[in-house]
Length: 343
Image (cartoon, rainbow, N blue to C red; front, side, top):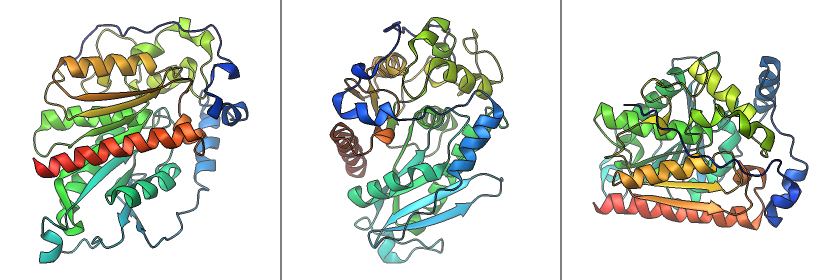
């Protein structure tokens, strides 16, 4: 199921500068403190800061729930539009009707596989639930190196199964559930779609992939270290992939589903949207994966933002270019979930 083909990655500039950024993004990145992940104590500090994020404020438009799973450190955060059922009890006849059924998105946070927390995306998840009228389920998964592959992916599978089991009671159409994520979460979403395809059973309606972390072979390229990409460098990338795989990135063979870009057979996967900046470390591997999907007959929309580095959609939330980017992603997801309902 794996391919030794190397991803084509352009070396890019020797060092990135603020002037390389889109004008809307320069102020945010000028002062952005790049996360430090190379040492365990640095990762613990990041996680401690994330633990201080308060639960989202109650809002009329969206209800929030936190559900912990049996495995410590795993669970889901659920954002439900007002008017949709939230009970885990058997659904009423009204909530079972097609006219009441909603779409849903299973969302996976970023953090290079070694840091991050589902709570970091609460505001985005609530806004998406409100604007599209869908249920958004944000997954808390375990992190490497303490929990390397396949533990994080297993947690995503468990969350998918929970959502499938809860769909009817919550007024969700089980065939209108997409998977998505940002950065490492985008890579996990792509891996989840691959695993679900091979497992059989219900399949995602779509893949919403923000700057996904897809290919360990990028981390194996030491010539990229000098570029010093904004927000996430290739040295950080080496830490992430090494921690997840418990091996040096770029080996001839990796375990099935560990590295989405290594899979040789992509036919049958759900339609995908891949959004990334053109100065993101993951730009070339993301476009290579998009071309591989298309070559396998999978519909794939690519949205490349000039002058945008990694994570700009989170780091520069208020920028006009960010708002436009999110709007295009929402429109695509809304169209895919609507198309699934009509299929």
